[in-house]
Length: 97
Image 1 (cartoon, helix red, strand yellow):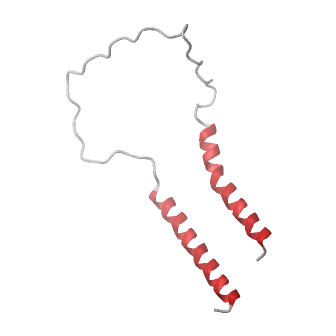
Image 2 (cartoon, rainbow, N blue to C red):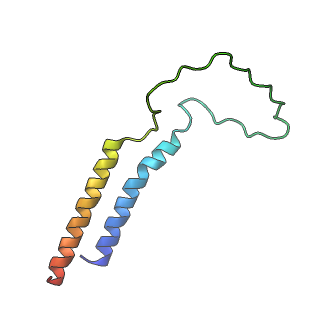
Image 3 (spheres, rainbow, N blue to C red):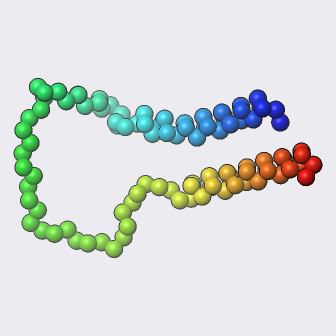
């Protein structure tokens, strides 16, 4: 493969991987809502003290949700290992070894 083809393939892969990040960053605010105004000295007000909690929350025995999807991450890992294996075998076959 020529260097141009490899570079183009790498650029396409990187663009494809960065697309979900751009989409998630674009949806920080739900539809129809505007961004909050920037805080300046004239818009700040003194903070009121937080109310004290009288009851202790019930303890749960489950882990909190962290937002990662292990199945998708495992799929990406498998694809990366497979692509690496193909590249190594093609390079070894091309070099004659």
